[in-house]
Length: 326
Image (cartoon, rainbow, N blue to C red; front, side, top):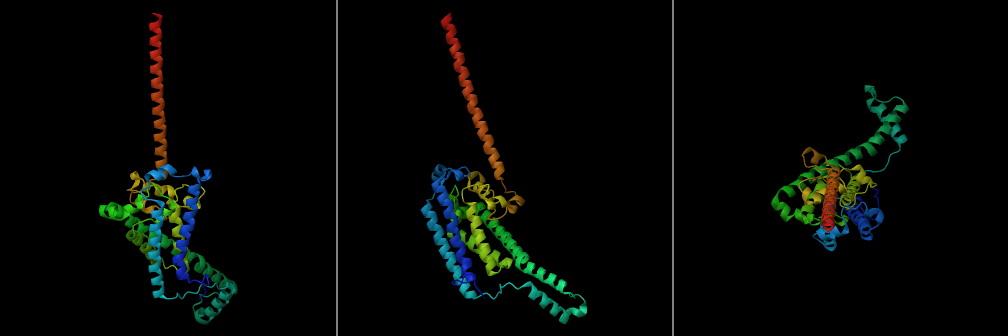
């Protein structure tokens, strides 16, 4: 079987590519935040000063933690790949004309007696096109969606359990929440036990349940990594296609990292249906509206105090002027 890259097997690529993509994509957001580019700064979820004051772990510690976890998980994955051996799947694209001839010939030989085979070449050609669409588009897409839904289900209930069980939160999940103001490198910053259960085991079960091919796994693992980094990037970007297409985005997940949102927005990394169905959903729009109302109320109160102080000063001046005239 032909590999995507001649120097590495597809199975090994499925393990290695997400790691490479993680550091490239998170590195982009890191340099954007460090350079404080004005175009991006207006979309920042937290100011640099707030991040420095509230985050309880250094960037160096976060990077070290993630590298160690990725090394362990990749090593375990390579051992599993070696034990399984090569995958016997033919990824070569079959020309439609050849398929049409094949279908027509096989039908006349085997099933013509049932009168259900195409008797014309045009019917055989249509059947061949349908087969190609199912094989190369519909079935892979359906499997990809199943993998996404399975991973979301696993991560929602495990994530929620790690929050509602005091011991699990204190011992394991609180590590991730040391990054109070999320940033890209912190996407996979976890206790190793939690990282194994939610990330390694979760994606493996999703892969197995969906029936994805190895190349489907390459796409799924890589996309899940990109999505997770984007959810922790620290920016609510209206032009980011991932944040536009998915309600489970940076603004949504940032709520979960705040004290008022610890018991909400457990879903990750793709959809929000479990939060909505089980009553743990908080809308970023709702939070933004409340913040705006508080800001307006605060400004109104400040203006009211100022007006009241001004009136007091004016009245006092008038009384003094009256005494002087008398």
